Image 1 (cartoon, helix red, strand yellow):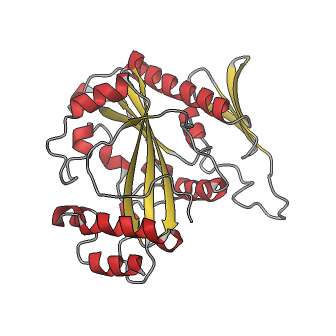
Image 2 (spheres, one colour):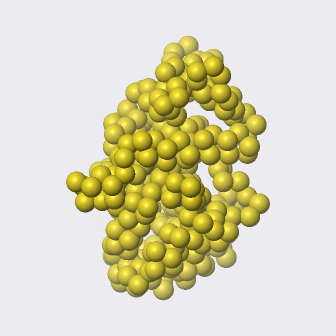
Length: 317
């Protein structure tokens, strides 16, 4: 058995939005240390590859947004994240103290002080293990957090994106599924999904307005990979060989939270990975049906064109 939140019964490019009811926005579980380890590795590799905040400007061909407005957008997103995390998990607190905001996480033993411009001014980290040398769990973040958004995203298992006026203006995505955050900055929903087969007639304006005003929403996305590694940035060139019987179901639980006051939507992307061998016979059967019904274009997009029969055979055993 597996703790995946979703087992595919079909492959569909429809938005598949449903209202988030009594579930948490964030999912923090016993796998937190391994997720944070991969996020730390991404920081060391080069945080600018994964974390970007870019106000849009007229010269770039996008909507004209002043830097002050960008700060307002990120303030709304950050304060909501901090308050929602504190609401859902008692070991995380966020408070105002003198001239600073203070984010404290008992799980990571990090206390982060942030000034009124949401810039990190101090990080206090207490060792959370008894090792004789500085291991990743007790090291200070490298490079150090720069903003409240950066610090918040580094406490959780989700990746996070912020869109304003249907343009991607902030991205903290250390565990991407075969896409590069740097290539998507400033893009609209339509631009981001332009290469996805079957989405040509999607009414993105309707989806954007719904996400902005009628959420929060929950949706799922899924794919297959040959490794449990979470960070599958395209420059790593991993996950699609399937040269052995290693087949993993990779599921994204996506939560979409709208902020009409700043015309922005925050996207939470929590990735789950499970070896298909841990699925029940019935679950593997529904997944095989979904793969069998994929079009040639969908197979190519998912990197499964010449691997479908091998995967179906392995999943059927």
